[in-house]
Image 1: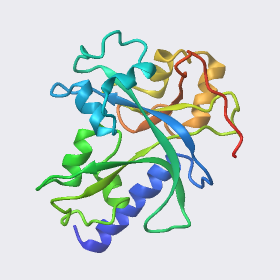
Image 2: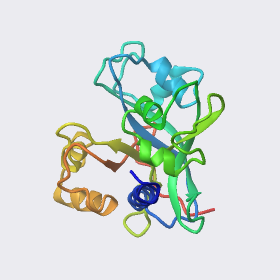
Image 3: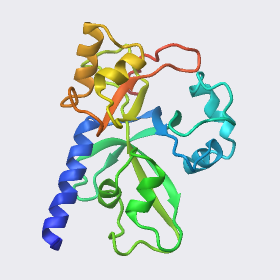
Length: 228
């Protein structure tokens, strides 16, 4: 692919991801969640280290349905948490988007594809290239790459009842409606609300990310806080 066309494609990918995370932010929030799909060669210790946790047991508070973190099976979903910040686009600093920026220590020979594969659809190779300064063919053998995971802090224009959100990558036959039902959002009114948080995702199957209101460790939905 010619360089100008590749650059245009990356800019379009960045714009699409930023729009999904409520483009035009002025501030972020201290906490957001991500739904991590556990692969057959992964355990909770490995996943926790990816997100900067030395003790995997801290993830228990946001995974009440998992009784024992030492026995998480392939195909399970594990909620991880991170701060959700208002970041500026590298190509256009005036364009901002909500995302977590997670430092990833690279090893020799890694690519944006191999790095993104570790995060199981919470990010993509194209999004990593668009949000890092290294060209895809010149990632250093040592150092760090910022793994960018889109997130949401809520929207006062939609509802002030929800301020904690789960970034959920769709897989296989999953849809916004099926994920919503699994998180106790199934009434027509609730689905209308989720469509507003996820414009363009109603009817999409098995790809992309959706944002679902999540409960805090006390089992309650966290209301949206006023900036400052």
